[in-house]
Image (tube, rainbow, N blue to C red; front, top):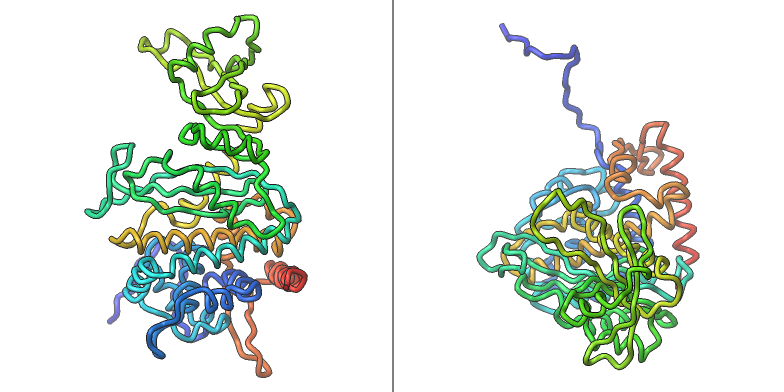
Length: 429
């Protein structure tokens, strides 16, 4: 006699042969990506497979994008896309590489022209976003971020951990990553910042320009200041408390400080030995309770800028980079799984990171093109929970595949598809 399983709640489980998908909302992203031109861009920009039987770039990249948007964190999570017959049928994913094959392809892509090809694909996504956005003058937010990776091939970062230190540049108003530079952990964030800014500008579509640059103290460099002055760009860059800066701060009279609840703010004019022109130095003196700790604390934060306007306006504008750059990197790392790398080779991880950037930018394009009002402020985690993870059932009716979702979601799905189609038709070259 078969013993009945003990359970907490009174329901039973049964298997079904019906074609079902747990993340049916990913169909919306996959369809939108195809309509935007992702398949065509990958075919055009990526190296061709060496064999007629090898997987194409699209067959490698699209499953990775779906996996990352759906919440996957490692190459092993590609198995969830493999096992989702409904999702594969709707998106025409007839052939999918295994996790091992995906890792091998990332290594080849990172070591060959594939990394540059992925860069050009990302430029296409950014161009679509900027065409929809309608703005031609942009604020560039520069930042480096540490990715911890306990692999023998990685280098020690300045924070004392093994890993990587990629540079990530956001176009603040559009919310997209214009460029990334996947660097070894021992490469200083201050390395080659001006070259990186120029690389970002070179990736803008024709008719677009960088109007302003914001960055932390790693970019406190005379050549970057001079470049901004010579090319008419506004900048606000975190400063360093070196000896000349401290002397300049000490010369500020006490009457010049404006006091707020949590800090006092003042400004002076400053220059560096190699700068061609003096700049504004915004000085922030945080308010501390002196009796909390006995050890000496840094008393000031400084911002170098050539922006016009009040001291408070410059400070507020500079601090907005926290929303656009720092939170944008957090979205990329936590939301799209870029906080860990899957491979032992830096070049392979560089390709994986760039695919993560493309997934992020496609999501931004989808969010602002098809999801409608109220969705723009949401991060990927919220959209994943409220839209991508809606379950669906795939049936065949009158010779057409039909994706059935709960009645409470059906209208939203239909509206998203309609808005996406209309936007893509509008943006078509």
